[in-house]
Image (cartoon, rainbow over all chains, first blue to last red; front, side, top):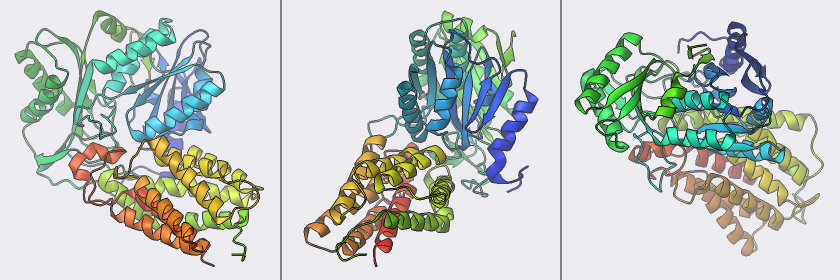
Length: 333
Length: 213
């Protein structure tokens, strides 16, 4: 393992201190318990929007704290859910009297910890609604699994829902919108390399030079299948077919197309992937109305990418375009 | 172990300290198991949680079994994270709620253990054969109840429970995971021992060692 580290045990706290120093105009960092909160929180009368999850996915979620997106983010240890006491304090820190929305990625640990946190917050008189994001088509959804994972759609939901909360929409409306974004979005990921969790010190899985993992999650867990490496065009076709057939997306749809890097893939390759995706969708008469290309929901230094498509309506499009000022996503403000 | 088979709070503390030491010994193994089908953090997380538990015990031992187990549960919930935090936290909270006053009888210990296991099942919504902690904990509870029913001494009943937990742990190897992060792998999760069942079997084995006399 070769990483810029002092001690793996201090990685998250050391990084959060740096984040606070770099973005003091946008956010504040509380270290015990750990949360990243927008500088002007709580905003009176505004629904608070909270998300959280393991660290190692930067800029998600702390990088999306700021005007027009999240009010607060709870970072756990690397790839480990944050804890209920953390989320309770974070929830109270952003309750402006209109309640707080918890945006939860569908991973067992996250769901369990968020459930306990919501129970604790309600006991203290804060109104909390929770929406679980589950957009990953790589996971067979059945009664016998924990359901689909929450991945790329989380970024899109945080932006769109954050804009609605900024406009002053109430908690029920904001939660409904979040469910609608989740319902209309599908994702799939792939990896060219494993990442190395700092506290473990060795790669989570071994992958040969000529191999790829299809259907990976964002925690360095292996994917659903291992295949010989193909051309980018074929890989994109494989992933996009699974996504488009699942919703299903149809001719005439207007979509937000999100090509995400897993942390170790350069932008030159991500734009190539985007172009292949554009051609794929064009052949099916699906219009890319909005796009996002870059590394936003990463898995440490894993090489690879994920694709997310969101079926847009007018309201979602308008809220996507609304001003946002965060460390990781910034336009119009 | 006193002749009247009274279980003291001090003995519960010794169990927890023994478990903490055992977790330190096997944390790399737990993380290795988790790397195969999960996200490579179970050993690290349990170590962080039990280190915090030991620090709490060092600072002063709670008055009775319920207070002790609730403190342990809350510490694990606030320090472990992942799925292990709420699941182990709930186990100890429920154990504490069912553990009665100053001293426990073997029957009382078993009742508290079963309450803890029921809490884990309810929180994680896991059934037997889902490839989780439950696959070690449920057989342990059943074996212990059977042994006590047959008049076995507490130490012997715990030894039977530990053996059953380890059998259950090994029986997770061929299973396809239906709960937790391993479930996302589908068929690929088969062939690997579940890390949660492994740490749970260790918890029961440490109990057997603590009361072995």
